[in-house]
Image 1: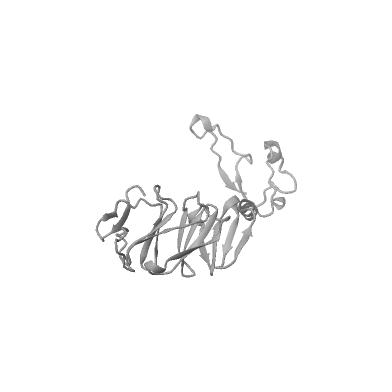
Image 2: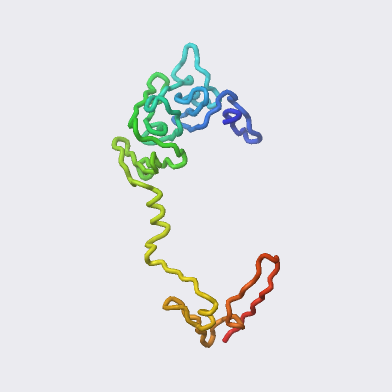
Length: 226
């Protein structure tokens, strides 16, 4: 975004459009589409057809010339995300609204707002999952859109991920025991420290201790096999 649109010519990186300081850039139907410019945050810029280095409007434009599309939705919000291509549409998102761009020629580009309440502020979360567009929306809610219907998939993704990662916490029990418990060979029903033939144990049958603040290992425990 700091230096404009660049391209790789096979040897070096070339700045092709220094004035296009955009936060979003996607390819769609033979054009590059850019958005999230600081000077015009609610406009989508389309390049010339098959020429991603030209975003300048023509005086007498042809169908292949660059195009600019102002989107509605939340009019006080900037475009946060462009996604190409879903159901033959260029999708755009603001924080609390989203829509799509129809058409493929300069004269027939049209846009439609699908929601003026639900959007996306996390561009990396927008994904096409087997024909349904899914993303992380406001209040950490995951939404799905099939081209016609908007569905709420989860109420709180933080709670969902916490449940997945933790499993059933009631079934996960861990108890810290003392040196006295270890020396006695008992620490309750969950752990037995009684060794038998073939077990690998500390030679002293004590938990190794060390003063880690002195920077060296002062308790060098040895291992043995019963």
